[in-house]
Structure formats: structure tokens, C-alpha cells
Image 1 (tube, rainbow, N blue to C red):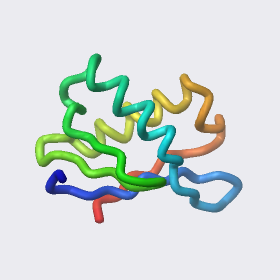
Image 2: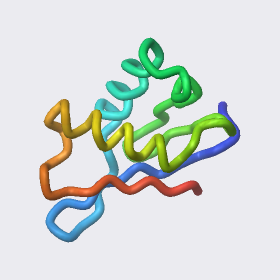
Image 3: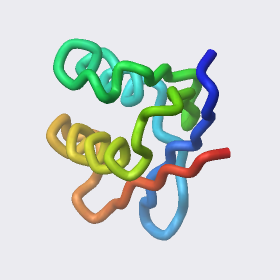
Image 4: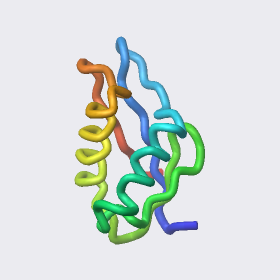
Length: 85
């Protein structure tokens, strides 16, 4: 749907796991109403999103990590990893 495809994973106990689709949906739906810079984000499946060309990847990662922590999804000692594929 959008020009860029990204992988969204998090580190947990030394391994990498795909972010569940429910986490990605939660972030995207929140941002359709509150942060227009992220309007062009569409969750596709566990660990995968499609984003528009104007979405800044570093800023997206920071916002997603913050949202996941506030929702209690991301463990305190885990790190979010975004990679364009």
C-alpha cells in the first residue's frame, strides 16, 4: 500500500521478537487522531508495517517505543528495533 516496508521487532532476553500486530494497530490507530506525521503507517502483520515516504523512521521508532512502554507492552529492559526492508 505504501512505498516503504519496515520490520518492527523488540529485544527480549537477548533475542529478537516481532512486535505483535495488536501493538502495531494500537499505535497506528492512536496516531491517526493525535500525530499527523504518522498518519501514513499501516500495520500489515506481526512485525511488519508499511509507511509513507515522508514518515521519519527514527522519529517513528522513538514514538512507537514510548507508546509501547506507556501501554505496558514493551518490557522495561527491552529495546525496539525498526528496519526498512
